[in-house]
Amino acid sequence: MPISIIIGAQWGDEGKGRVVDWLASSADIVARYAGGDNAGHTIALDGEVYKLHLLPSGVLHDQVVSVMGNGMVINPVNLVREIKALRNMGIAISPRNLIISSRAHIITPAHIALDSAKESALGAAKIGTTLRGIGPAYLDKSGRAGIRTGDMLLDVEVFAERLIRAIEAANAVLRQQGGEALDARAAAMSYLEAAEFLRGFIQDASIYLHKALNNGARVVCEGAQGTLLDIDHGSYPFVTSSSPTAGGALTGLGVGPLTVDRVLGVAKAFSTRVGGGPMPTELAGEVANRLRGSGDNFWDEFGTTTGRPRRCGWLDGVMLRYATMINGFSELMLTKLDILSGFDELKLATAYEIDGVRSEHPPVTNAQLERATAIYETLPGWTEDISSCRTFAALPAAARQYIQRIAALCEAPINMVSVGPERDQLVRR
Ligand code: IMP
Image 1 (cartoon, protein in one colour):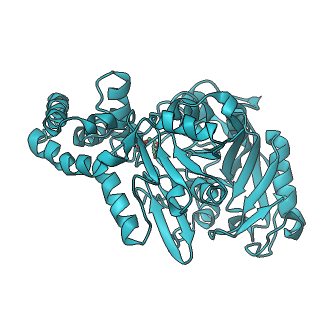
Image 2 (cartoon, protein in one colour):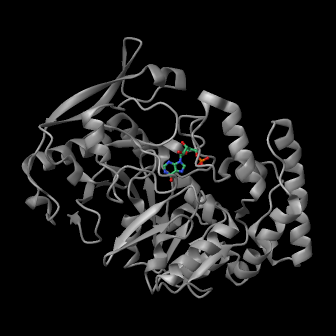
Image 3 (cartoon, rainbow, N blue to C red):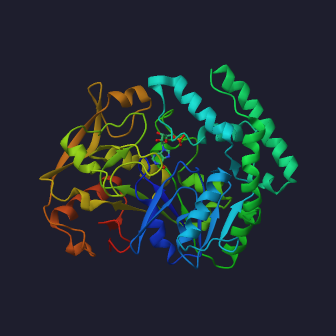
């Protein structure tokens, strides 16, 4: 069975892009299924650093067709900008190797304005969104008021009219919230050029995938965000508005579950989170600063999309075990293990204490999660630089012990570990 689903097992930013990039070398199709340009995938290749927000990481491989699935929300202007930027770096992108589902939803300028207005209105209780209009776009989708990518195939005047009507409807809400209304006509016009550019890329991606699967294609489904930001399974309301989990891959592409034979959970060797919401293993001070890095390197813990410093802490094994359960990971991969080199000892949260009671699972409410104290197991650290290790046997014994403990806790094998940002800095079993 030909589909592998790659999923973030934490709060996003686990390094999925480079895993997908690596798996893409033996794939025919790489397909994104959820989210929009709230995502930021950074890939280092031959001395160049590529930052992708909307395009699947497969675009960097000549033999791969990249698919943007119906579960995504797409800002056409930003997509065109990203395509042109990559073309300028010598990456060929055409309707031959990029397919955009006609059923994805469009992020309009109104969605972006509404995202900001809503966050401002929430004040200290804000979600900390990426301000890319993601939530309002999904709200229109489920409210059956959205505009879809397929609508860009309409007569240009009909498409413009739809955009203007949608922006005017949003203006009423913006005014109510004390925000500034948009010039609907000017905002709509800014989308027409992008629509024209993208027209040739749009088709029914599910039908394309079915035909390809029947012809034996191997497909990698590229998750964005992470399980703990899932609209159903994350710490609601501090979540994104889509399903970045295994189920989301199926609905977000229109493929059936029996086509999937691998569900790979990608987890960083420690925890990070960006935006608001509970994070039981969050640290302040020296350890957090070491985990975060200075910001001088692209792999340091600062948001690819927003530049915000990420909140950092020890690995939360309770959440990772939960993510394994929600997605049914057939295996886990650990990234950034090299960042843990040099710590005398490492801590791994294996349970929480909430109001004096020990719990092995995340609690039901956010209020309880806010009160959760992590119960840690302490493991020995290692001093060696592991960035040139390529086999498990070459890793220090303490690093192997750390990996084994996480695998046992989550009851999922760990067969891959990354030890640096470059494509080849992978330890494989
Ligand atoms: P939104 O997806 O922009 O609505 O943001 C909702 C929450 O998800 C915020 O806490 C964001 O910081 C977080 N988020 C969204 N996309 C990503 C991502 O790609 N990596 C990490 N966090 C993200």
